[in-house]
Length: 215
Image 1 (cartoon, rainbow, N blue to C red):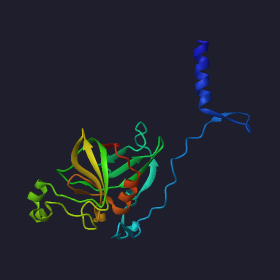
Image 2 (tube, rainbow, N blue to C red):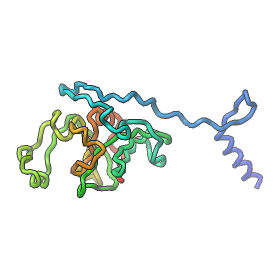
Image 3 (cartoon, one colour):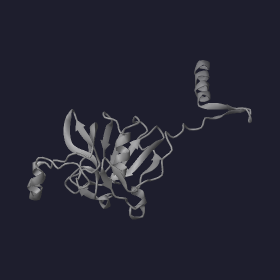
Image 4 (cartoon, helix red, strand yellow):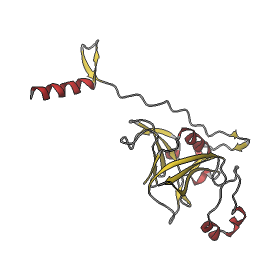
């Protein structure tokens, strides 16, 4: 019994630090947030020779603007991505305390999905090839059956993050969009849209092999 009490006391002290001014042990401060969030920057820019127009933050609801928030999945490893299709948010886990949150556009009625995937690879100004079923629904896309080159008018935008399940391509992406007004809405065919400047930011932070949880 004495040993058990001593062990518990040692664990309690491990969570404390000595304060010489107070002459006693005090609780340790929480670990620091992984980084200071840089100010939101949706200004116009040039990337790989392509011009990306500015997005006025005043025209985007504040809940869909990138920010640092408490970690919604503290049990998951840093680098994990959580997509919340109900609130239309994407979270990138930073550490046990914090996550970066971005606003996204999600699948419209009949195109939503949930589950777990992994990041297989990433691409800058990716080529987009509409699947046959999409061409069937929208015959005008026939001209892109062999792929639309990357560029400002490409539906995948400036960056794409490719989601795989059990080694197979799901066909779903996290990607940019020139249609920034669709952020916060159900407008896609199952992919997750982001403001161009945001997807560039996320693309730089994400590592292939990272878990992606969609719920």
